[in-house]
Length: 77
Image (cartoon, rainbow, N blue to C red; front, side, top):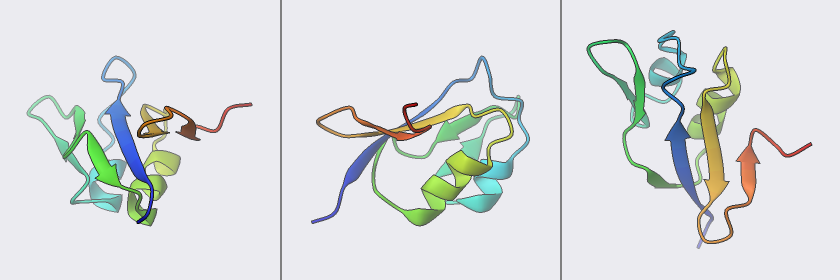
């Protein structure tokens, strides 16, 4: 069984670029104010979810391992 992630979008940082929704259409949606929301707060680890987080121009998306809370993205310095 693979890792599971907790997905969070900081809507105070989100600029509504839509990059996450276009990169991972099943993982993120935009509301009427163009703010991003994860489709599910808990998901199986997936390359497209990671790519969406990495592609966010303002790094509004955080991914952590379920259970341990260890940072997946952005990586801890």
